[in-house]
Image 1 (tube, rainbow, N blue to C red):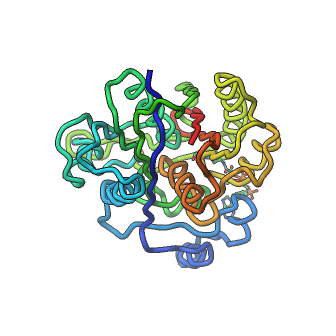
Image 2 (tube, helix red, strand yellow):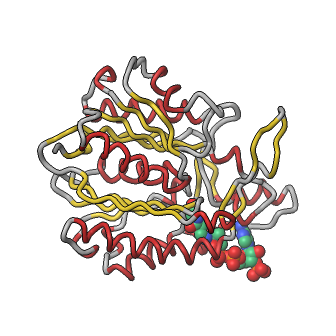
Amino acid sequence: MPYAKIIGSGGYLPPRIVSNDELAAELAARQIETSDTWITERTGIRQRHIAAPGVKTSSLAINAARAALDHAAVDAADIDLIIVATSTPDFIFPSTACLVQAGLGIRGGAAFDIQAVCSGFVYALATADAFIRVGRAATALVIGAEVFSGILDWSDRGTCVLFGDGAGAVVLRAADTPGITGVELNADGGQAKILCTAGGISQGKIVGDPFLRMDGQAVFKLAVTVLAQSARDVCAQAGMTPADVDWMIPHQANVRILNLLGRKLGIPAEKIVVTLDRHANTSAASVPLAFDVAFRDGRIRAGDQVLMQGVGGGFTWGSVLVRI
Ligand code: UT7
């Protein structure tokens, strides 16, 4: 049975960078109080990239995909599976993956979206792995892409300071050597309300609330608990413990969550990839963006064991263990 191996990665961030100070000044003009000190101390975020009005998720995804294809030295025509993880698709349908396929000039092969919010990339990677393992795909493009700025309530300081826009992508190829060696996916729909955008469109109108809502403390506590267990479970599949991994790439939501996780699992801070300070929380894009940074700057090398973890709305969470 072939393994699914990561052979290249790419990232794309919209050019506009908004620092905490700039955001605090924008919010102050609307009588909403926040500060660089609060945001930095409570989250670790220093800035975020925000897409220009009208820029869609598919456009960020196509840019990230092109970078990943170049990095992997793979011709777009070789791609026989495209999965886009997003909660901010361009349209209700067609899927963002189909728009990406067309944008890359690819004809044929499967293309679909996965909606597991901030766990989306890990879910998408696990799905692509399953296709490759059973021989239903040979070369897959797995993308996490979001324009979360479009679903933020900019009058809610408890959420609007946390998120940013971006896209990350990896190319997976069937190989004789590992590869993805462990997958653990989980969900608890009973916790849907602690993190949701509970609106939709019907009869030409928005029905419900179109903005992201979060009970930050509830999400924080649950995230630390489920990610720690998920890390242990996925490592056990490969006969390892979390302390054995070379690199940990958790969903980039809050540096305090990352530090707590590291302490619980015996993983030193130097082994945890952090891009949250520059990217903020980009939901499904956060893990592939962080992977791309550490892969390209030479920290992650061939043979390394990398643990990727997602957690977020649904409530969903999961881990993928991959040997580079
Ligand atoms: O991507 C999916 C996964 N998401 C997460 O994992 C997010 C998890 N949650 C968190 O990261 C944290 O809970 C937050 C960063 C969202 C909030 O941090 P916290 O330490 O839990 O703060 P809090 O919600 O308990 O609020 C503390 C205080 C409150 O004021 P009072 O009631 O103590 O007077 C808030 O009103 O901080 C206030 N506050 C702010 N102050 C300045 C909330 N947001 C802000 C803000 N600026 N932006």
